[in-house]
Image (cartoon, rainbow, N blue to C red):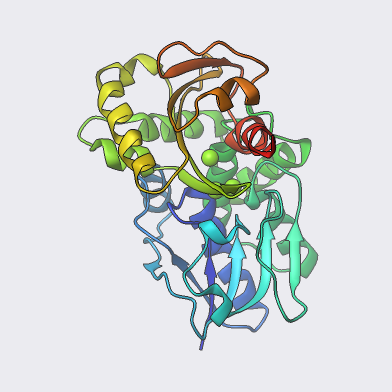
Length: 307
Ligand code: MG
Ligand code: MG
Ligand code: MG
């Protein structure tokens, strides 16, 4: 039975591209593997897969009796159901270490870089396996997406170097033009329901026993969300009411380099605690310079919930 390679719930481009690439790498190492997804792919990812000739991975959510490689996450709340009934054989990630554990030794590649794609580029080099052109293409897009075209504080020199090398392999001459094309697709919100938008890039966290959800929409111009804000606020209130302490939705303007955060919380004072006493008016707040959930938002809330 093929090893399944899986990224987080509410898959983003990195999660899907990394699952495809790691499955290719493992299969070429002689260990048959296949990429899967825990749900429908987002429009940005559909654009990237189509551009480089891939179809969306099969959806699978139960890990029972599977051998599994986790990419782009190690948090149980973001992973497959019944993970403990499967066997994790490897982890490839670029996040804080989550709460998965294994009874057996495993291969781990976890680096503090901007994208799982950057780690995977190094893995192909390490194993001396040639990366297919189309795999290089999707990993390149994953890095541009995760680092918001190098603007995110999560971006490292290793990510920039990987993009340079992947662009050569993929035959992409204008990396930034490809990035802008991708972010324009990502910004398209008309026609999508409020629920689709909230869950397009959404993660649940366990913060000191509180279930906290953080979603993010990255757009090239925040004003395009004006007509949707009321519906998005109502939607996160609904999501919060479903057993969560708080749900936050980051509306990130990638050109202005900041985020408006919509707030639904049992105790909104946690926002001021998380962001240095920032003044919240109504149920939203502007966070100047904040673009990364992983580095600039989730850790702040984790600390704020600790007390
Ligand atoms: Mg991801
Ligand atoms: Mg990632
Ligand atoms: Mg992201």
